[in-house]
Every structure is written in structure tokens, then in C-alpha cells.
Length: 279
Length: 279
Image: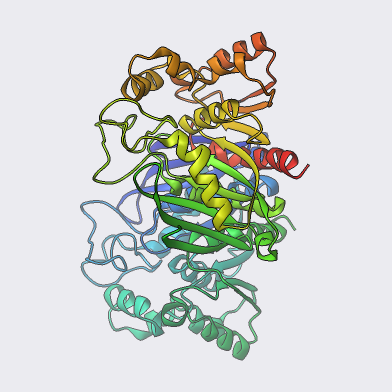
């Protein structure tokens, strides 16, 4: 099922690997970063943190820049970092960094020319964990996190799948895609004008109906260049307040939208997920 | 003197910055990564670790991939990461990644077309620390480290400048450039056939005459794809043994030549330099 191992690099006593695999759901080959901590050598099944990246990213951004391997090694956690969209010459694309390849938005597209391949929601929720749990020393104890578009993905997927994740967190997430330009452009393309479908992929809309009170941990830099236009964490804060949904929103002074922000706090996020998954 | 600040990003409570500055020594503009830890806000002058990167690198590789900021913040150390050669359309270049721009080898070239701009030795030894100490809360307490070609630079510059650095370390260094293809190609181009000049830029040749017994800390991955052909740490080990020069050479099992190796051990190197510089 894992057709080809592209990278195998020692890192903090474990192995940072990259695989290419054929995705049935997406109808194309996908690349995938997997960090196996030293504890994976012992044969036990380890919990898994799924990391969803942001616009323009592949699996490489997180695995080369976040510095997460150190903390995964400390806590005995596998890190899985998928790509952000279907890929390849047969896959529809668009001009601009915020639609098409590199911008899957973690939805199942229902409109043309996207519906054939753009099924990132099903890929992340179903196909990816099945593949990981079948091919690595990975348990079904899962957590999910991500950045920006991937923070949106982590929050919406966790909110829609009670019991599937022990914990969820996000860096600089797009919390209300239905209300900001990035989300409106992508949702209009992938989902058409079905506003109910939009709401099913909007964290701010989903908290009202969440059947599980999974606490949301959100870090947001206050010098983030996209804060006021695209991210708007105050909308999530208001929705959680109205719904009584637990939210820890931390505004981090001085931090921007880059991996310098993620690397500064990924250790705290991994510790948070480790407590939930090992506890 | 620091013409332009290109980046200013919060990182581990401090600031990762990138500057462009005109270099008098190199006769071109240079970019420069500077990490200012949280302690830099307090006004005291902090010790500085100079990091020399390897072939093809700019300042970006180290500042985005090594994860060094965490440790610099813990120990109150400024990190300075220069580019690896003069740059720009007026600067001579060559085909191939191992000569010309991105491959300065930390020497002062004496042959054409290189002699005009390729003076990385003088830049690193003199101009760079003067610039750093004049423009940042940086003391003249210095350490030096680097990777591959930059490990060669760190070792040779420390060995030739007794008293200038409190400590030196290297990852995967080219320890005997006069005896391996990378070094032979670069030295023949930059220094001609003056073998005495080669020896002044060859760590394995320099230890015999070193007037200061500065201990050398060297980490080398045993799965490094360049180990047997270009790096050959056993030559440095033999030279240090013959000269009675202190060397801690650590062969790290499974690690390759990438930043995954550097990130795994940069914390130990920074702790080593912090002990020497704060002690």
C-alpha cells in the first residue's frame, strides 16, 4: 500500500520518513511525512498526531521547519504530515496559491472540475489513518493539529468526528472560512453555492452543534499579517462562548504567520496532545 | 552600516532577523541571519555563536531548519549566520554547486576571476564580527561552528586565530580539503597551485602547528553519503593524535548529511559553546 519510501533520515533518535502512496480516495499519488520516534523500535503501537499544513505547503514544510521531531521523540508520538491537496498533471488546478493544488481546504468538492480528485476530507478522516495504522506501529489513539488552512482542517474535522481524536489544536487557523476571502473563494469553487455545505466545514458554525465538548487549543500571533482579514479568531471565541464550547485561545505577542511561530510553540502543543493521548 | 532589515520574526521569545549589508571586504551586498534571544532586550552584551553553512546554502538554511533558536534562547546567546559566498551579477560564478557562488570555502582567493570578491576568510574573521559587535547587543565573546564546507571554515578559522573564539565545533566537516575532491577543486580554483596556501586552509594540516589547544568538537553521521569521499574524519583524528590536539569526534549512528542531523545535535553544540562563553 505504501508504494515507495522516498526519504529515511535519522532525527532525534528516530526516523523522519517520506512516502509516496496511491490514494484511492483522491485518485492520485500522494506524498506523506511520517516521523517514527525512538519508541517505535520497541514494537509497541504509539499514538499519532496528524498535522495538516496550510496553503502552498506539501509535507516538507512541517517536517523540515517545525522542529517537532524533538518533542515527538520525548513523548513517544508518531507525527503524520500529509500533503495539502491532490497532486499531479491529471488533477485540476487554478491560478493563484489559494485554490487548486496546494489548497485542498480539507473538503470533499462537489463541483466541476474539482469533484473527481478534491476529496481531502475523506482522505484525512478515513483513508490516511487506515493506511497509517496498517503500515506503521501506530495505534488508533489520534490527535489532530494544523496551521492556517490546516488549522481550519484540524478544527472542523475534530468537531465533526466525535470520539475520533483525543485532542485538537491549531496555529493561526482560518476559523470562519465562510466569512473571509480565502474560504469564500475556495468554498464557492469546491462546494458551489450550497451554504449548508459551507457551514459543515466552518469551525465557527460547527461549535454550536458539536456533540462532544473537545477543548480547542488555538495559538495565534498578534503580528500575523492575515489576522484581521483571513483568520479572525474573535469569531471562534464568540461562537464558543455562545455554545459553551471550551476554547483556549492564546494571542502570542509579536508572532507572525510563519514557521518561526509554529516552531516556538509546537513543543507545547505536542505536550498537550501527549497528555490527552497517553492519559 | 546595516542597510536594510529584510526579516524580523518573533521566535522563542526573541527575534530572528535577516539583514542585507554592503560588505567592503567582499565588494558586494551580503545577507545575514541574526537571532537575538530574549535576553537581548535587557541591554547586556551577549556572546555570539557564528555559524558557517555548507555548499549551496544561504543564511536561510540554518535559520529555518536547524531549530537552533530554542537553545540560543535558553542560553542567552546571539546566533549569526552569514551567507556562504559573495553574491550578485558582478560576482564570478561557475557551473556546478561546488565552486563559485554558494561555495566560497572561507578562503581569500588569489587567482582570477575570483580574487576580486571571494574573500570569505577576511569577511568571517574581521568584517563580520566588527559589524555584529557594532550593531547588535553583542560582546566580543565568540564561538564558531558550521556544517560541511562550513565545518571546514569553523575549524580552520578557529585554529588560525588563537584567542578569537572561546570554542569551536563542526557537523560533518570537510576536515582535509587538500585531500578530497570538493576541496581540491575549490582550492585549485581559488588558490592556484600554491600548496602552502592550501595547507593554511586545511584543518588536518593546521592542527600540527596550532599554538592554542582549543578542543575540537566534531559530530559526524555514519550514514553520511559524503563520509568516505569528501569528509574523512579519520584524517583529522590521526592528525590530532599526532599533534596531541584535543578532539572529541562523535560518530552518530544512522545520521546523514542533512539538517535532520544538525537539528538533532545543535542543542548539545550550543550548550557546549554556552559553557565556554559564559564560563
